[in-house]
Amino acid sequence: MGSHRAAGLIACLILAQPALAQTSGWQFSPLSGEGDRAAMGCARDATPENFTCLVVRCEDDFSTGIHVHSSRFGGDAGAWDMTLDREDRRFVAEESDGPYGARINKDADLLLDRLRHGTFVYLRHSGDEHAPFAFIDLAGSMNTIAEALYWCAPRVRPTEQNAASDVDHDQSLGPSKIGEVQ
Image (cartoon, rainbow, N blue to C red; front, side):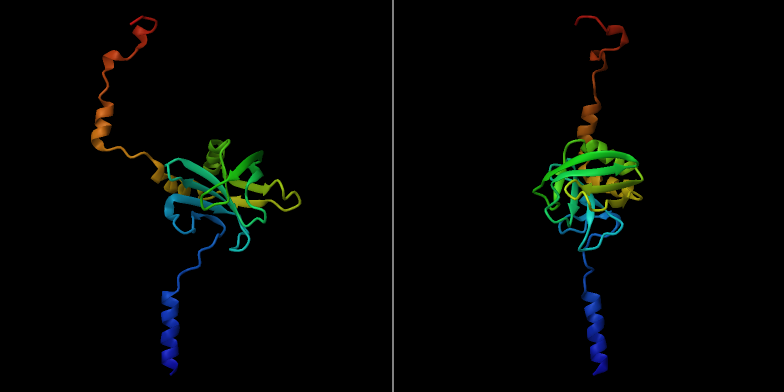
């Protein structure tokens, strides 16, 4: 009888799926359907129940989106105060239809650059004035973001690429043709 229990326990362990949760550091998003299209960086003290994360995602239209994803009561939309490598900034996150709380649209390119090349981010929702800042280490962010955004690169077929490179150089304005009327 004991061997049947052991076999049942082993079968349960083998068939058990790992729990999907937000954990500290940079990894691909664990949310259902996201796969490797989104890089998620969560605070160092993140748990499945209490987390603050920044997400860089290849959107459905192949644009790049930056989202705030947290367990914050009251939602993720609103102003977020951030310290990016000792520079204080404020970013506004707007409600999003996607799987994450809110999307940052204004100054998103600046934030993306800092997430790729920086060393740390402290962030806190402006409505949580007395709460501590969440700390997100940016180690590993560049590679994870690059892999997620790989899927956002435009796809060009070899024949289209060759046709696009066949430019009539006689029609270009070189240094000798500047100022001439055509």
